[in-house]
Image (cartoon, rainbow, N blue to C red; front, side):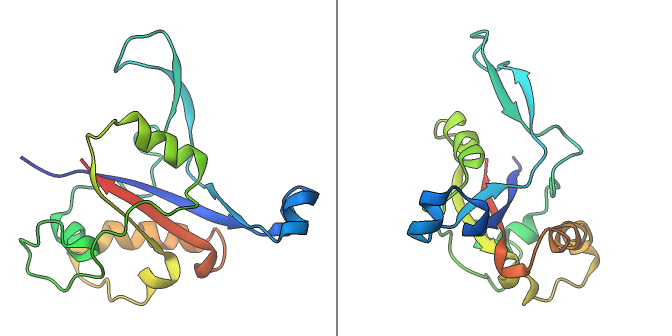
Length: 155
């Protein structure tokens, strides 16, 4: 049985873009950079709508156990150097990503995140990381590397 990744990209919004109260308090926040669409809830059939990211619109959606092992060591079958043990969801995770996590109701594990700055410090050469390099290139177009992060978990 394989492992899949739910991979989201967020951008830090500087306080100058926020409401006056937030500017006064010096708050920044993270927002989702993914393309979300409204769709009927097909999991519970409760005639409600939810926001999802359609296939083909995600920053990264391949199944690559070597990458997964390298990010968090969830199985480490590939015997690679692990960047970090799962960190959990960031405390300031965006509302859309947080809601996507809640919707899975415990059917996911090993939540973690990295800033683009952290990811770019790694060597991602090799054919096995080709699709991930494409995702990193897309992420670089969003903002400076310290203001962009990947939030992910596995199911």
